Image (cartoon, one colour):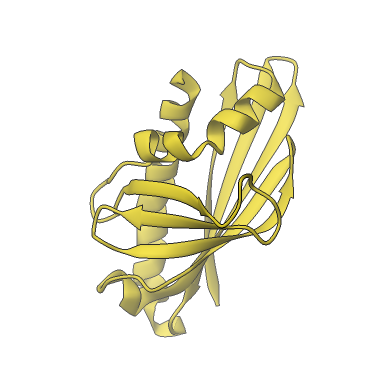
Length: 153
């Protein structure tokens, strides 16, 4: 059983520029900051690659001391990116979710670019659904906050 949430924002900029800004490793560190119990990203780099592509892994380090790989599952510039993190979390989050999958879409609209970021959590057991659902609502605010910051970049 999975729990999903999403955040969406309109950027007043061309799609390629928005795509590049949102997926920039340095911007992940700048704008994906800690929010309540959700750790921030303090390090983001590619593992054995020069550019994002399907199958490439990023090394993500979070403010709670976790380092994990994130595997790119789908990548089509400037249209979409899907990734899954492949690494252990620290408790108490580790007791609730096994993994998470993020999916970004970038749509051209008359005002610029609409970005929709969906996140799906695979729970450790269906018994934790109420807690994971509440956490996903907080995570949604974290995502919206990151998108707001990216819009300023």
